[in-house]
Length: 264
Image 1 (cartoon, rainbow, N blue to C red):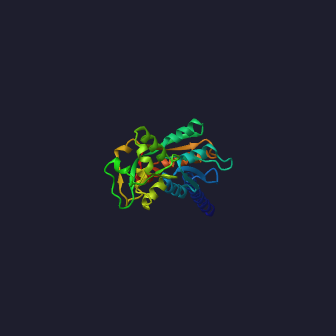
Image 2 (image 1 turned 90 degrees about the vertical axis):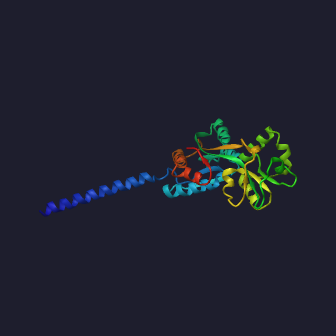
């Protein structure tokens, strides 16, 4: 009888251990360790900073994988993707407009890319400044308008559109350049300029300032795509981060909450 009792205890203990192992393996599968201890490197446009900062924070908490975000003008980010460091290659590329991903893809740098959100150009006014009633008001001599340089998607696409419609020559003397769209928005916030041409999603980060949607800015739009780079030393982790960004309950939720028009 004693032997039988010990056998029963041993069986119950073994079953408990087995259950514990199954639970441990399930948890490990859900938060699988990354294949590389180094952080994932994401090159992203400055306009995407609020969204990617939130996404990276949540992703790190859920997976234990560190994410290093490097922001700048889209053209600058493309240059860094084209000339990767041998010891510090990028893993993902998220410019403000899909045209930069297309350029990278033509160079054989993209393994996979997916659309995430869309943006359009609007006018962000300095505090206390009333919206112009017509394009002529914006191009008048007493207006100072900030617009990011051509290295930024908003700067390149706006110039292309206004040159094509014959409006750039009129506005150009009023323009004050900036490195990124965020720099333009901050210049308007500080009153260094009277207005800034920025993406609508960026303007929503300045709720105390008025915005205006001028007909002349219609058609200046961008599609945000996130690409996994072929140079990535850990493509499986990069793809996992991309899936996280595309998840409606994770990455897309943050884009939506910040005022982006998400692609689902």
